[in-house]
Length: 132
Image (tube, rainbow, N blue to C red; front, side, top):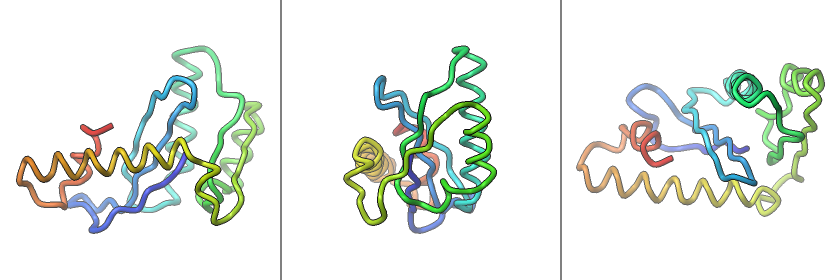
């Protein structure tokens, strides 16, 4: 899991992308965010969707040391559902390499889509949806 800040903000007001990626299957889901604090609700929603569709939950979530992943609401939710939260040390993106590599690939695809379509960069949220 990671959040990616994108400048400039999109025409819909988004400034960030929440990236959720399964290390094993590489299944991914992205959510555009206006504020990082929205990440908690999207993570909870995503985990409940997995539980409802697959009748299971992940054993653990691995994140960087971002503050958006340390809210008491998220920690309580994970504890109730038996999910461990593994946070990498500060300033160590290499400990979250799967998400970091996905971010780079996502940005590259977004640049290609925006460049080829000749639309303003403020449409990056639409490009991100197609790129993932």
